[in-house]
Length: 149
Image 1 (cartoon, rainbow, N blue to C red):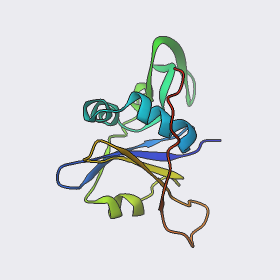
Image 2 (spheres, helix red, strand yellow; image 1 turned 180 degrees about the horizontal axis):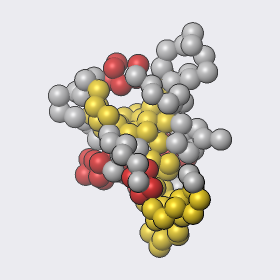
Image 3 (cartoon, rainbow, N blue to C red; image 1 turned 45 degrees about the vertical axis):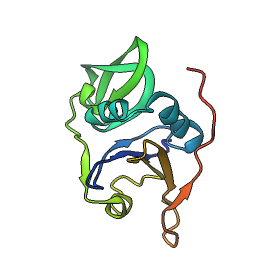
Image 4 (tube, rainbow, N blue to C red; image 1 turned 135 degrees about the horizontal axis):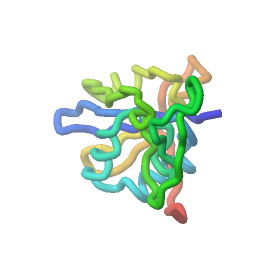
């Protein structure tokens, strides 16, 4: 089961450009991956430019070859990086929200966490309380420490 999340970058006009991220979106993994491997505006912009993804840090990539209806071939590559839905032939471009409030209120896929690389060059994480409609999104800590890979 996926821990759905959204990854965004705050632009100069306070708008947020973001993508959907399906697997392991909790701060103990995705938060640490983002702070370890996507720690500059250039790296974050490149990650988001690829569109929605299954995961942002893996050696698996879709080849685009269909093995059966709804089943695409996966191959292992040498470098870690994102596994974009576009690799399997889907068109899922980034989403643009006019500000942080809109970004946090427009959950498309039941996202449990939302990340923003802000204009200060820092990652922040919001617990979206996806399974509790009585709670609003709230800032939550991203644990310190780099992941091994």
